[in-house]
Image 1 (cartoon, rainbow over the protein chains, first blue to last red):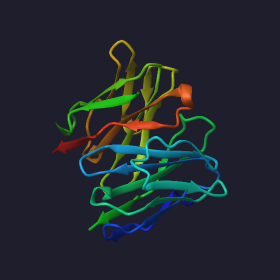
Image 2 (cartoon, rainbow over the protein chains, first blue to last red; image 1 turned 90 degrees about the horizontal axis):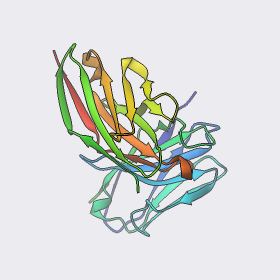
Image 3 (cartoon, one colour; image 1 turned 60 degrees about the vertical axis):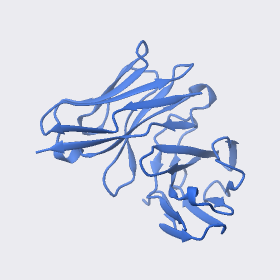
Length: 115
Length: 115
């Protein structure tokens, strides 16, 4: 029974480059979430998916951020033209529920460093 | 818009003492409320949640929280702290009327337990 996995675990990139962060949710989980955790701050909601659909994209910080989910499973968060302020830990979570009160199971995160 | 305020970024207690971590929320509707814990070098995991059933909610590891609508609070307590409780604790809120998926987290409270 694998949990939520994320790759890469660490990513160092240069300012202006694009990065892709991957999330593999727990099998059968219909909901998938992306958060950003900056040093000393809580989790910042970015986006959630119900199946392959993202009903609320208002949490994405700018149009440089995008996310997709295919096959109701794997999700990719893409950051274009990275900036230093994008440096953070990006967390993915999934839940098995038709409603939002279900327990979210979190992955270990991807630590992104933009030089 | 919903929001969560956790009072005290750091709380220190002695082993065996009462643990009290404070959380106040802002919501125009009765919310879903959650406490998550992040142990050192581990992912976040759910401690407990309130979803409009009993106002006193019991969670794992002896923690409980009480939903007080009049005070817009959802404080986390444990009668007797253990060294293993040292971790970061996050309070979170979501809106059932929009499915409850968009989850807003507080900034977190780091709990230190002294021997």
